[in-house]
Image 1: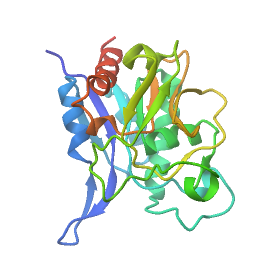
Image 2: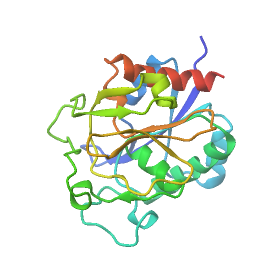
Image 3: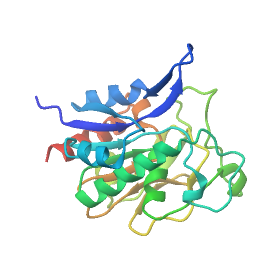
Length: 239
C-alpha cells in the first residue's frame, strides 16, 4: 500500500532540559498514519528555496494548530491576548500556502491552520473572540479540558466539499481557539459555522483539495466524521 508523503507544519517548544525542539502533537501523526499517509515535519527555519524544493517532493500539506499569527498580517495594532507568536513559522507557512494554492497541491488546515489560510489569502482575524465579538460563546476550551471534549455543534452547509465528506447539518466538535475569522478572504467560502456565527470551516473552490476546519479532528478520530476528513484528504493526494 502506498503512503503519500504529507508535509506537516511544526511549532517551537522547549523541553524540560531547556532544549529547543521543532515539535508536533502525536495526534496529527496518528490521524495521518491511520489514513495511510506518511507525515514529515516541516521546520520553521527553512529559506524560501528550501520550501520550494521540499514541495516538489510532497503530495500534500497540513497546516496545524499552535500559537497565534503575528497581528501585523491582519490588523494594525497589537493585542494583549495574542500569544506564542513565531514569526519564522508565519513566514514559512505563508510561503507554503502560496505554493500549494498556485500549484494545486492538496492541503488541510486545522485551527491556526484555518486562520493562516484566511490571512494568507487576504482575510483578517478577530485577535480575541471574547474581547472583539459581542455575544460570542466560549471557544477556548483549554487548557483545563480534555482535547476530545465536544464543546459545541457546528452547522455544515449542504452542497459543500465538507458536507460531502462528513454530511450536512450539525456535528459536535471540540474547540481550542481564542481567535477566529473576521473578514473572509475573497477566494474562500465558509462551509460551517458555530451557533454564535463564528466561522468553523472554509474551503477553496476549484482547488483539488483546499479545506480548513477550526476544530481539531486529530483528537476526535474515535468519531467517524472526523476520520472521514483525513480519509478524504488521503483520497485527494492519491489522485
